[in-house]
Length: 352
Image (cartoon, rainbow, N blue to C red):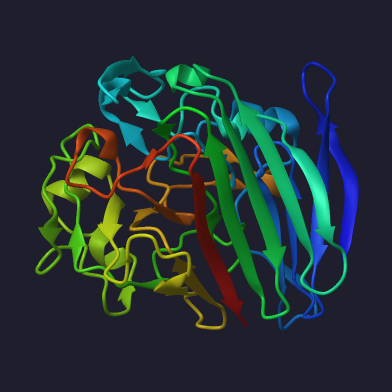
């Protein structure tokens, strides 16, 4: 079932709509056509109520003022590009700079700030919507017009399947993701440090103090980034490792072991388990990397229901190409060739 309603208005009067996808298991996901934002994800709990497991805001203005990308679709390029510069097909490009001297998540007016067109694909079992957006040549400094589609499907197995499709007439970059902050005990329940996580990655990409990869693909052995076995989030956060100091916590790309170029099938990448072990999140993707981020910078950030979000109140699992890959030719390529079709898929499965 899908219920459509008004969420608010953009400054120019454009209506922002909310689409609530509900399956027969009693789970529902609310998605805005503003930025494709996952606004709420409600799962049944033992109190015969629902737990909202993603962080978010109450109003359009809050989302427009947000610098943390809560729940949003990211484009054109997820994560960072060093100084916003790259060379493609022999031509140099300068993209928008919006974090220090870097381009982050597509620039200051990235896909998260746009109102997308939305079409209901299925209103029955496995409710599904498609969001579409056209990004013109030069948008935030990126080359070529690109037409993108994102399909959200809530399955009867409590998987939120996110499919990303795109095509461009000119060779460009494309690296989409979703930036949801998960708190499996509820968005209003405080820190996730006692939650456990597992990510099947034997390598990661160390960064400099600006969170730009050094180019090394390093083994996770004997580092805080060895998350191949279930590990409490508090454990790496407590480390005195230089990389943890640089990020003020976890904010790093892990290189997923099961990745195979050209595959269109999502493989198991890892999971998170709530501190009381009654909710499990499993992550599946066909992307090469996953950025784990523990909301290190939050401090009294006013969220939904007037909750004040603090540091480590959520954790992101951003499936994507590696950061700054246009400037690291040995990283998996985020180049989208002209007239070629882009496809990626990520699935978040909830067990409760």
